[in-house]
Length: 276
Image (tube, rainbow, N blue to C red; front, side, top):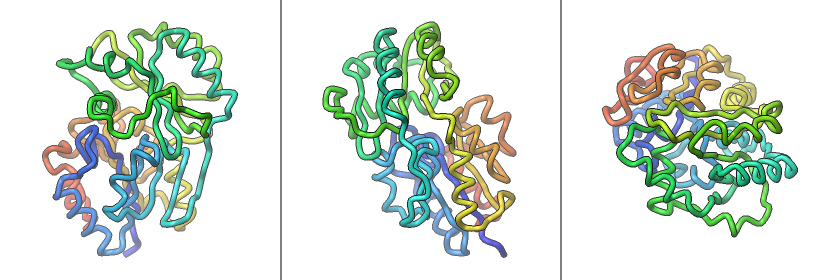
């Protein structure tokens, strides 16, 4: 039997949003899948700094920063930070238009002061997994550093949050040719959250780099996710699975929908798909 490559989003898929401890059932499924020769990779929008708490579970590699940084075992396959001029332009345009910014570098994450207060206004309303993750990160100070401490390190992705789409128009006019504004489905009016991602990469290109390195055809790949930044992963893999807690469009695009992350979704999906 040829080995399968399995790619897992983190927030809302492997873990509850903003958490760093997967359910025991998910870890059991991963270990069983690896025991028969399959390989399991994290495939996430998180930077490596925010991936670190999960690495001790023994994954075979990471597609991090939405495809901007990719590893397979101990090998770095891809490393693509944003050009410094683009970071400067984005930062200025977002700040001028009242958009809250979070810079994701390789080893640290920097955020605007006031983001926590802004996110507190989303409490009690329906929210996507990415917004929930940032609520958790800000409220519990999960490795977030103040923007004032940013010293010009390479930036891989910018997370953005604001009240209206009009606030993004100047940045779109300047950057959209080279960058994807990956905006999440929102249940709450008056709040927008998303990511600025260079068009040179995405989760799908990261997966293809791993497949080429390991000489595994796409038909032997599986991708599990729940949100808008998983769509390129779904397009790249042979079989795509959206969590029941996922957004409407990811569910529509996926090959199938499995149980929610809080209902042992990964274990049951791995079992159904005969991944162990």
